[in-house]
Image (cartoon, rainbow, N blue to C red):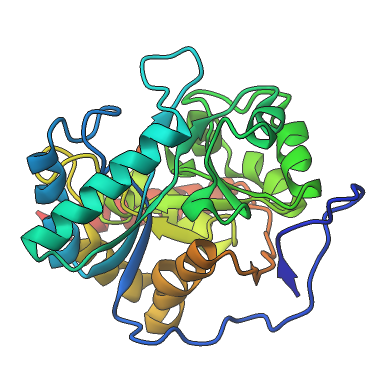
Length: 300
Ligand SMILES: [Fe+2]
């Protein structure tokens, strides 16, 4: 089964037939980054075209061949670029990339802040889907909570054929406290993205959370969420090494190439099979505490 795009006529999100796994992507070493703040002057990413080019160079050096530029879109907030502004920013940067000889294919997109009437605004053309395929929307949850209306927004999108891709879910504090908060949303058909910088984090608690999400099919793709070549850089190489160690080469390619490629091209992706995370028993908590102590000693 594959997930995704539901029927326009409403009702339950439609599942499409297909294999559990996507066919291997050609040139599977080439990472596809569907969440990066690449355009100059639109949000807290690069301020100038030169800084955008530096970030593009960094992405290319780290193995990225295709990227979706996803500026923050927060209605009524400090960052709220129109689709036209994003498209013109992509056109300007494409020309600059060609002139600079940087081999990075870029597409327009947005990282849209959750709000109750999000689908209505999307349908009115206020926001861009990822690579403008009309199939996947990068959706940012608030930092502290999952508001009660989130399930309705996710369902509204799904029944109209748009799959929400929840941005950097590991950074949401409600999910960090209880990863099962994500289960309902993924079970309904949302996808969840984690940041490469969290995969490669020096904080064992962050890595543990990301690994738990991946293990339970509560996270389905990795993206950089890079904002700047040096201040918030793409950490793809470090993340790929960690991912291969955690999940093996095959799943690492699925998380960083195949599912992102399907998103950029508007194709369906394998239907997630989310598992609930069991809370640790007192014995397991003590074992975990001992294991972390040993890990810290070995790292010292
Ligand atoms: Fe972001």
